Image (cartoon, rainbow, N blue to C red; front, side):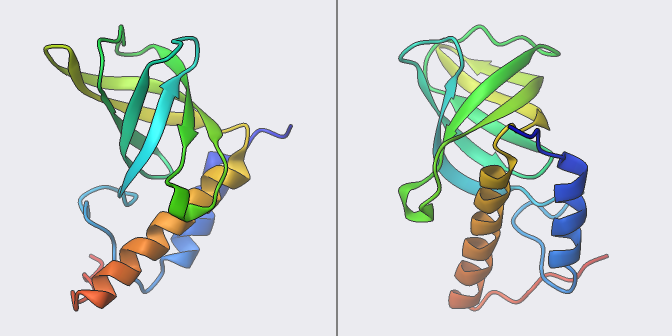
Length: 147
């Protein structure tokens, strides 16, 4: 398996997005797309979480059960994309940047280090980008201007 190049994906998406609006989180250097994919932390049997948003550089996971996640630690996430995407599961090697715990659940922000199945990761981000643009067009939301 060839390890995926995050830098190459960033360059590709930058070219693809030239002239198009950015998504819901415009203040970021790369758009974060909302998603409802399921996520499992490798090594934690039976605990399923929710991928709230994702970009080529990072993601946010809502942990629906108590999990021992530590900032600056690395993890492997198994992402199970939304069924409508038609894309199979893929792994992401990530590093925890922040943790916001609220009782037995919480949100965790990650930076993406690598994706062994990089083409599936790229296809999923492309699908979310297409879906976001289609929803904005269908709702009559004008494109946002780039700075």
